[in-house]
Amino acid sequence: MSSVLAQTNPSIEHGIKTNKRQIGLQLVQIFLVGLTIGMTRIVIPGLAESEFGLADQSFFLLASFVVVFGIVKAVMNLFAGKLSETYGRKKILLAGWLVALPIPFMLLYAPNWNWIIMATVLLGFNQGLCWSMALNSKLDLAKSSQKGLVNGVNEFAGYAAVGIAGLATAYIVTWFGAREGLFYFSLTVITTGLVLAKLTIVETLPWAHLHHQKSVEAGATAEQKTLGQLFKMATLQSKPLFALNQAGLVEKFTDAIVWIFLPIYFMSQGISLIESGAIIAVYGIVWGASQLITGPLSDKIGRKGLIVWGMWFCGLGIIAIPLTQSVTLWSLEAAFIGLGMAMLYPNLGAAVGDFAPAQHRASLIGVYRFWRDAGYAIGALAMGIMAQWSQDLLLPFWFVGIAMFLSGLVVVLWLPSKN
Image 1 (cartoon, one colour):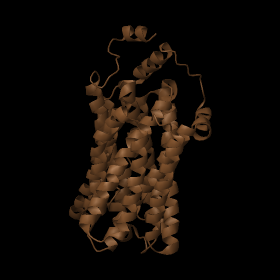
Image 2: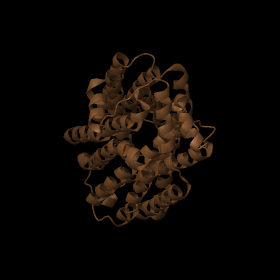
Image 3: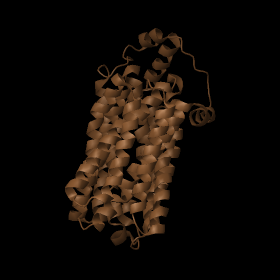
């Protein structure tokens, strides 16, 4: 059947080299999606009090926008895969950019923090739809043996952009002001993403169907399952998928504390918004760039060791930050955390792909991404409550460090060694 499909359209062939132009265009999409989320990393937490009226030490209110983002993005991740299997990857990608168009105007005219939360709802839609589609499309185009490389390059493009955008917006708002700077940056990025998605991206469902046909010809069988059945299987019935899903959820605690509390913590230690942005940019850029190595490496040596040690590196780095007191050490610790994220992040997604039949891969990756981004909401909620209760940021750092260690231990026990 795959030979019939290939003969019907000879251009449908798997492989990064064969599809390098389209994969490159999909990477541009991921870069733009990363810029969209990265613009919120430094400026909004750092200027929440002066621009949006949050009282000093209103830690729970500060965390609220990440809680909302995590909930919305998690739900979008869950349904995006299934929707794309029905309607196509490109239509869902375009929908993700369209829903983001009001964000620049909401940031510019926001009279209070509730507007920021509503803009974050739209941001969650954008990230859940666009990031999911750009990743799934590249997995469609690549060979099955290239999942680690695809995930590594994908996350490099996205999280390098997160780091770059955080630092860039810190500079831009010093020139134009917080609202105007975010407006110009976000409107440029979102409209560029929408136009390029419309004009340059092709529909990759035919490549996904070819993956499925190849697996059938190789003797693999995958019965039809509803999204509910797949969610139950991945969440409760499969130990390997449970191990990966819980690790994805907990690792977002690390990114949540970087997003919400590091800008506030660093500025409370007397450093500027731009210095804070530079430290956090180190985290994002090291995370992004290192995935060019850790993603392909997992295809050769397996995923498990990289995932476990990545979890533990992150935990150690997070605990070290409040125990040190210099920009140099904080920068080194940010790089160490970024390296840990690079070890675990692309390889969690790739490992899910290892266990997912081609027919259900987009849906099962969607379930994983649901639990992973639910970690933003759960982690931000827990840390916001802890910080509000203690009126101090030390407890969230210890919470994240211990959670990362314990989650890595679950992976040690329940993920097969071959992965």
